[in-house]
Structure formats: structure tokens, C-alpha cells
Image: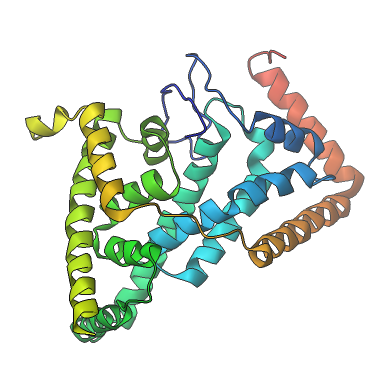
Length: 220
Length: 82
């Protein structure tokens, strides 16, 4: 974990995560890069490019786990980084840059997922049939050649949205409890509760998948 | 609200995480994709250029309007502390 962060209060109407708190400021490992962005953008994009290189993979991976689709994840990643480019001058350092950034990423994923859900609802005239087909594809995909992250992805896809989000933020985005609390805009106790429950469910689903994988391996 | 759930401690969470990590092993992030990074940079540069052109299009009147609006905000609102 690369940041040490104290809990600060998050206002629900503060979409960009500039939290109002007079408590101790968090230690932000990205402070220098952010300060350079604020001083140099839009003329000089060198510092922004460094931030992009540092976080692009983690952001993309988070979007991919949350949205379950590579193209959607790419678009959400691009949208989020564009927003960061335009809003970074307004970042006041009341949370770490990483928390602020993931709040933007999370909001973009939520918006995109809602749109996707509406689109799918319209398209799914044969919903059950499609689900059966999806399950078959998953079963076929669970071959011995799949790497661990793909099994994790399959297990995540089976979770409820709420559980998938928090598992992703913890294990893929590598956020601390306090950071997740700010990103999700819920209380710390609720974050703990959700994370604990989600981990239990994830374990159950993952182990079920592992059993299928082992049976497939033994059968081949 | 389930009382039991309010009692989840950070220690219990940590243990659960360790257990889960032991089961699934590390999940390495995908390697950075230069192609994706380039695409984002292109979008950023294009967006930035559009913004500049739009600003230039507004010309002197746009600049004056912005200054007047800022002055009014300063006059109306609380004093800014710098």
C-alpha cells in the first residue's frame, strides 16, 4: 500500500472528491507530479503523462473488472483520464490523488454500467436463453490454459455489483479501507461490513470455479 | 441492521484478506498498454486544442466577460484568502 491516509469527511455532492476536512492531511506520494500538472497543464503534459503511465494499467484493470467488457473498460478509462486532465487544477489535496482519481473512475464506471444495463434490458428479449448461453461460454472458457486473473474475473462476474465493486477496489485498485470509504461515499463501518461479506461470497464462488477447473483437468 | 456485522474489526478483515490471498494468489495488474496510453494522450491533446481554439474564438469579448464575472463574484462573495 503506497499511501498512509487519515479518514476525512466526504460530502455526497462533491463528485470530484475534494473533501472538506480540516483534519490531518494525507501523505500523497503523487503530490509532486500533481503540483507539476497544476503548474504546467495544458501547455506541458510531461507530468500528466507520468501519472498516466503510472496508473493507466490499474485504472483499466479496475474498469474491466467493474464493467466486465474490454471495450467498455477502455472507453471508461479514457473518459476518466480526460476528466482528470481537465479537473486536476481543482484538486486541493484534501484526499490523496489516488483516492480522488478512483472516485472519478468509480463514478464513470457506475454511469457506464447503468447505461449498459438499460441497453441490455432493451436488447434481452430472450433473457434466460442468453444467460444460459453465457454460462455455457464460461464453462467452455474454464480450460486449463486460463491464468489465475481470468479465473478471478469469472468469479467476479458472478458476484452482485455491490460485492464486485468493493472486491475490485480492494484487490485490483489496491485501495485502503479509508480510501474505499471515500470512493464509495459510505461510512467506514459499512465499508468493513461490505468488504467482509463480499470476500466471503467471492471465496465461495472462486472455490466452486476451482472445483470445476480441477474436474476438467482430471477428466482431460 | 445486523449487530454482528457492526462488530467486524480490522483484524477480522485482515485475516479474511490473508485467507483469500492464500486461496487465489496474487492478481498482477495487466502490463501497461502503450497503445491505450497513446490513445488517451491523443484524446487529451485533441480536447486541449479544441479548448484553446474555442477560447480564441471567444476573443476579447470572452476575456472581458470572464473578468467581469470574476470581479462580480469577488464583490458579491466572501473575501478570498490567498
